[in-house]
Amino acid sequence: MHSVSSEDRPSTTPSVGRAAFIVMMSSQAAQSLLFTLTPALLPAMSRTYGTNGQFIAQMVSALAALGLMATSIASGRVARALGVRNLLVASALFYGAAGLVPAVSANVVVLLCSRVLAGGAAGLLTTGCALLLAHSYSGTARSEAMGYQTALGSLIGLIGLVGAGALVGPLGWQLPFLLYGAFALPVAFLAFSGVPDIRLQKSVSGQGFGAALSRTWPVCVAGCLLMMIPLSIGSNVPFVLANIGVTAPLIQSVIISGVTVMCAVSGSLFGQVQSVLGVRQTFAVALLLAAAGMGCIGLAATGWMAGLGCALAGAAVGFYTPHLVVLSTNLVPESQRGHSVGLLTTSFFLGGFLYPFLVGGLQKMFGLSGALQAIGVLLALGAAGALAIRHTRLNGYLQPEPNV
Image (cartoon, rainbow, N blue to C red):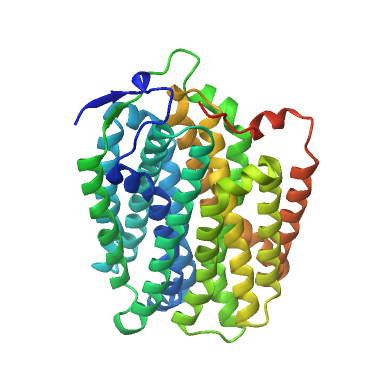
């Protein structure tokens, strides 16, 4: 396998092997499994740990987000040191190993530490996949590929969500964690065998981490706030459903799966929708869908209404996730992409780490349903703001990169 320098990349999009394409699609799947495999397990898990069980179960997601946040911020340096292929192989193997630890140990300290480590591996894998994708595609093709990445991630998340719901009844909450290893091992093999050894340009003075942050901070702020939506759904909808009498884990999983199904649909359509509506309008539509989804969940009196809310929120995630990732790669030169992708991933999961506390604060004020309705109102205001911004500095952040 030959070494490919970023400086040698042709101006047209290079051919992408099948193995490399599958690998670059895997990052959203790895993130999805971190947070979609666990919702069906949370009620049984919380019973295992007694009076603090609900908080421990919710921290399973929050600590995975912390691990993602911690490694993503340094992932650009790691990618430059190891090369993209080595980063992908190592992070996939570590993700699988750490992810399956709860299947063999119910010790609470081991459980929570393994979630930090699995999240950290996913953060490195995300950056490696984004760098491979950005190296391979540009312009509209990059937007479409990023949308497909989001769609595939949702489909894999759906498998994890429904699979865990089906397994937790007969097998308990621990064994479904073996799915992490089943996912990660093929990704590591394909990365080793099918990804070229891409070496990144070195950052020059004034073009490193700080320069990337100065260009992408609005995108990072948006990512931090919007990541709270899917994580809040995964952690809180099981309890919303239990409050209205829907307690069967498999039925809960099917209802929540509306998020991943619609995320897959909207993600696969992202490139085409953005080309028709425009960048800013597509983002505003995503926020409106998220607002409607959270409002439906907050007002839900039946499983059907909660399912509608999950579907609307999932459609929103499928639009705004690739939107933000594409911006993070378009706004910086190639030498800064590792930093910019790492910053965005860190921002996503800073939101993931903070959401139990922020949503918990709203819940103390308004109750669980009222907190979700309040989030819907805030998202609707954000959509109005996105449509209103026409002649400000932010417009520079909303322009897609032209085809090269």
